[in-house]
Length: 470
Image (cartoon, rainbow, N blue to C red; front, side):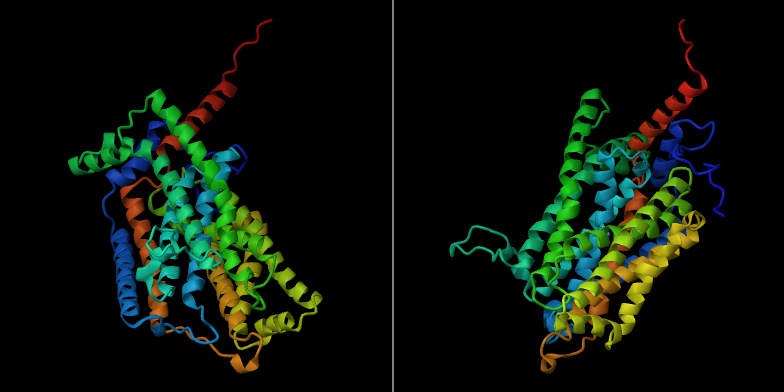
């Protein structure tokens, strides 16, 4: 049974993120803004930030050693030329997709339940893309020459090799990061003005005032804000599909068994949304408890996110099934061996764990009592996070280590520098998250007040109907 929140009663379609009976819209300011301006630094926040910053130091050391010695410090070899770098790149890009889906697509579809979670999901997108972007650059071998992949003016009139998937990734990820940053910041402007007006510390007031860009809340400002927000939502919507489709082309254009498949673009997009919603739930469930947001992030949000995770998990499961079926139906001996190698090869425990985490554990979300149990939802989300990382490991490593010629086969083992870089990006991600929830509103104040006001008008109209003129 779920614990009692400020929003009590059965879950229904009218349950929206309002505070409690008898509380005013101003309570939204008190609940969200005061968590930033007045809540003291807790021991838990300090411990979490310290752990995250310590892991970031591991990242600095691993990257410095990599730049000093070269990519040979990693476990990559022949034939596994791609290792943790590409695995982690695809994993982080996938995590960043839920924010854009929640913010842009659900906004255009007028889904009001997105309001309590969109700001946090947008921030998570930015942090995940920042972690993802460094891996292809580090994998280049000479990352200080990254600007060669842009069509910059030069005396030799040299252009990037536009047939290279690496160049596609640069354009796709940079576009996605730019639009996501603008979308997040535009939505944040009214809330920065609220923090500016409520801040007691002069330095904080100046910082929030600079970010608010002179916002006064006038009708002209609101009109321009809503226009810009809808335009950016329209630009972000195709990016949800296009970015991970382009990332899937890194594999699909190759002739390696397990890569050369037309199912990869939709399969990767579904997997990205799957991983993204799992990460949102993983971080959002502790956040709502620690900051007292149970009245804003209600059971309806948990239930809907679990449903979306279940739907995308079933799509991913269907993709696994079709991979196996087409390897059999296509009668290609190399594709058939690739599937047999996944099931019974030296890396079979990874494939078995992948199937359990992504296909079996998610089946609990069919049942409403499981979707309304925070511990179960959080544990399933963690399984999905691990399973989606294993999926990238299976695609990259298990397809490369045994390809066409047995004489070229080999094994891949990550080194301490592989793990240091990966864990360091997790620390960077967590550090950004801790700083975000401490210094910026994790829930959109302006949108919450508007939604609460609309719900108040709705309930008032139904409780005091106007007399009908006869």
